[in-house]
Amino acid sequence: MTSVASLTSCALCQARASQLCAACRNVVYCSREHQKEHWKKGHKAECKCYEVATNETLGRHLRATRDIKIGEQILKEAPLILGPKVASAPLCLGCHRNLLAPEKRKGNYYKCSSCSWPLCGKQCEDSPHHKAECQLMSSSNFQSKINYVPGEAERKESAYCVIMLLRCMQLKTKDPESFAKLYTLEDHLKERLDTPLYQVLRANLITFIKTVLGLKDWSELDILRIAAILDTNTFEVRQPRERIKIRALFPGAAMISHDCVPNMRHRFDDDMNIIFLAKRKISKGEILSISYTQPLRSTIQRRLHLRQAKCFDCSCARCQDPEELGSFAGAQNCVKCKAGKIVSMNPLQNSANWKCQICNLKRTAKDVLTSDAQLQQELETLDKSTPVALEDFIYRHRVELHETNTHILQAKYALTQLYGNAPGFGMDELTEEALNRKVQLCEELLKLADIFDCGWSIFRGNLLIDMEDAIAAQAMRTEDASECQGKLQQSADLLKEIQNIMKHEPEMQQLLSERKEILDIALKRFDEIKE
Image (cartoon, rainbow, N blue to C red; front, side, top):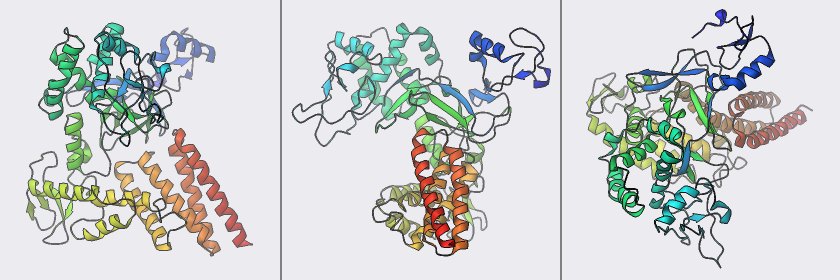
């Protein structure tokens, strides 16, 4: 890469220049007009703060070509293809929106007049998303059998598994260049072929495509490879104000690496473009990364999820560290010495023994995995309509599970959502003890966020929102002027940080506006106390 100091000639006219392109920092211009002209002539496609790199571990990946500021937009990409998930509740194949329950007199969804797939209405029959697949299915005399079932409108329909696959296959003749991009993506087909899902796909999907639709030129492996490319590379997308998630494929974004402590986050705009933002300052040469798993999960849980969903074994810094960067999320208390923590002797080896860091008591991997699975199952089946069951879970397991064990962390995060929101536990209904508990939980989890989801992460932003809400409520209740002033200032400081983190999230702006109103009320209350 050219150094900034060596850039002296305008990229358009070669005259002496010093006006640096702020986005890529790779070219300079002699004037604003030449910068605009050069952008139109091709710099738009080159103006990036990253490059595609390759190594044996990651394969193709993206690497920063300059220092990137926190909150900076790094990549924006339109979907190459989008459609329903493999199993989906009924949705419109034209606009991908939720299908509402039909009027009683009609008794069923609106059906496409050609292929009978449920749609919003006649206007979606000619949607570019649906038209090609509709022509193929109707010409083969295939009619969808998906119907509205009262009381089961959210029932998952496996028939949707064919839609996105067909859309990709049709690119081969409709848009060969896009199909070529798709076909270069990683598939992990070899690892997927023996899984239960691909056994089902092999038995049902192949027959449908080759026999029912008559696409005999496609081999079984080519069809399954596209299915595997989708499973490996697609992102789940929820459209604004919609319940049902769909899948979208972004070839550029598919090259972004996974890391359990990522330096980027992503969001989707109203046009379904994916947008990547820097969560923290990223140095030149750093690998750009996002996370495909949840930060509060332990190494065992994260690596198992990634192996099952994405077919790779993560070996990031957090996964390699038995202590998980000091969080000890996967560790349990030693039942023998009561003082040490049991950690894996080799976190990247699933069969490795676990050992207490103080008394050296060993446990087998099978023992730890079984215990971990039982605890996770117990946690997931708890009644989460109120905080009661979760608080009881934390209390009952206080001996074997320390304060930052993954199961305790998951319970605590759920509690931050319930205190102030659950029926009977609204912010105005919380006791002083419960209000203090909400603040305490947020503070504890924020310390963990600083370890493995640092910077401007959505996880951190959500915690700060809950904490600011609770502290503002505390300020409203106190009659001590000094305490009120301190809490109001703390609340105002938190709100500023929240606004920085969430400024790129349009759906959060109303909530932040409401938070500001609450803070203004609290400030007015403080003025009344001072008087």
